[in-house]
Length: 235
Image 1: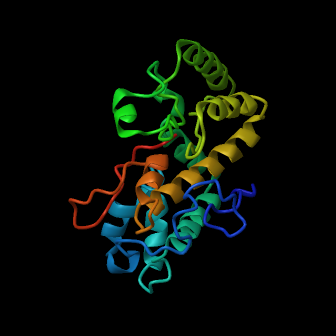
Image 2 (image 1 turned 180 degrees about the vertical axis):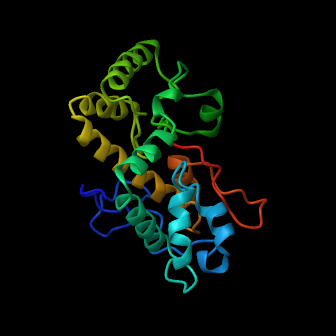
């Protein structure tokens, strides 16, 4: 069982309001499909991808869903987070290692695409913190920082990127190089919880649902009988 103390849930009233799931999403938003309407197998199928490689997390929560107490995003997020936080350290590490490395998205590209310009969109590069549209200099810096990060920790670099620009992503990568292994492990878990909150927000009717999905996962598949994120991540 982990003895580390997690950061406050992104749904908590005391949480940083700039963190996922975003100020526009109601913090008590009802989930769709409601967990209480799903059998345990379907619940795991739908919500098991809130954490990458996290079917076992959803399986532990599934027996608690029948009464309807986990039908809102904050309640389900808290239940899932409890399972992760009380899991054996080895299971926590497997969850961290299952998450895609944010720096795998690093690429050189235009800061603002032609399509963005035509649509009048600003250059916020918000889906991945702008890491997929680097200048050559930015790309070289990220590659160098990431090489140091992998050598030091051997972990994927995980960061909830909603609301972050590329400068803040790079600053986070630089700052976390100062961590020891346990501090970085704690930070990685906290970032996973933020991403999970953003993914759950995509199952709500909040006005920022699509944006929240971009912060942590593909939006739910509206062609299915029950919505489910594709499991790709922001980080």
